[in-house]
Each structure stands twice: as structure tokens, then as C-alpha cells.
Length: 166
Image (cartoon, rainbow, N blue to C red):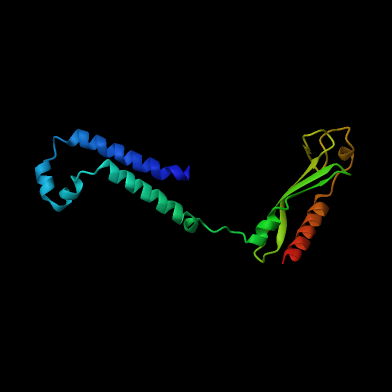
């Protein structure tokens, strides 16, 4: 959407200028306007070819400057690499862990938004409710998981990965 805001603004300003000129043409003394310095600029005829050349030059300049204008990302290359480690699947227990990786102000990685899923029910994993599988006759329903222990485990894993990257 951000890409089109400039195009929309230019188009709407051109349409607005056209309607203003149509409505107020009779009220403006063109001879008096052309005699002033600003009038010379405003009443100058512009060819279609010059508009096309201007548009092409604008696009070329934009494409050349776009890499320089893009915002730098908040995360370093190593942090981005570590942020890709965001899930783990344990087929033995039938558990899928998903999380987000954030960093403390000291740079230490930590797990946030840890979610646990049961994968013993076909292709669609079931999200844990109250630290257990929501399906009553599942083995993961009868044994609750300790979220603090799991959270600590994945935090430690990320710190170990972070130390290997550095």
C-alpha cells in the first residue's frame, strides 16, 4: 500500500487541478497571468514526450536509490540467523514446540510466545489447552507439561546456539 500512496496523490492532484481549471477558467484573466513570472511557468505547454521522459527518469532514479533508502533492520545478521530457529518437533512424544526469539538489551537471546502442540492427531497439530492436549483419550492429555521447564530448556538451547554462532 505504501508504494501506491505517491501514485495516488499525484493522480488525485492532477485530477483536482483539471477540475479547478475547468470550473475557474472563465474567472482567471490568462493574459494578466501570463505577464507575471509565475504565470509564464504555469501557462507553459508541456509535450507528452517530455512527460514520458520525466516519468522514465523518475523510475530509473527510484530503482537506483531504493537500496540506499531502505531502512536498516533492527537485528544483526547473526541475530536473524538465530531467529530462524523457532520450532522443534519431538516425534517420540508427539509434541511440536513453536516460539519466537527475541533479545534482551544485553544481546542474550530468549524464547517468547512459547506454544505447544500435540501431533498425534493427524496432519493438524492440536494446540495445548491448560498445559495438556485437548483430546481426552490422548496420552498427552493425561500428563500435563511443565511450561517453565520447557521454556527454560529452549532458552538454554538458544543461548548455546548463540554462543556457537559467536
